[in-house]
Length: 171
Image 1 (tube, rainbow, N blue to C red):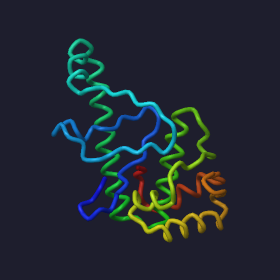
Image 2: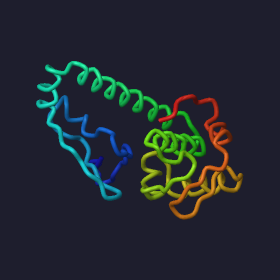
Image 3: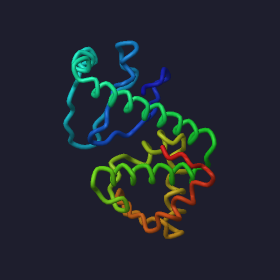
């Protein structure tokens, strides 16, 4: 999202199979831009066409409503993350979220490559680049993760979950 003062704010990192552009349903205008961090394919579905198809396939609209509900829950989780968690807790939550999403797609939950920069992660988590780097270093020093440039190895999933503190919400 581009702020009025020219700064950019990262509002999410989407993966294969996830929907984006839901922000335009109410106003017919997108509030954000999407930037591909790697080669990808996008399938555009105009909302009017989705509504039309849903009239003949009611289960499609029910599924779409579930997806929209999940987005609302995710947004609440991000608000909790930004409002109440310390830097290390935010990063742990972020890594656990990625881990879970990779696992759902059939990939390793403990070893993956980050497509985004530390600065983009910081923008998303409401942290400065230096703070993100320190949090990564601390998790690595404690042997919870191993970092090799953009390659992340989660060595101890249980301890990473403990780093989230009392927060039970993973964004």
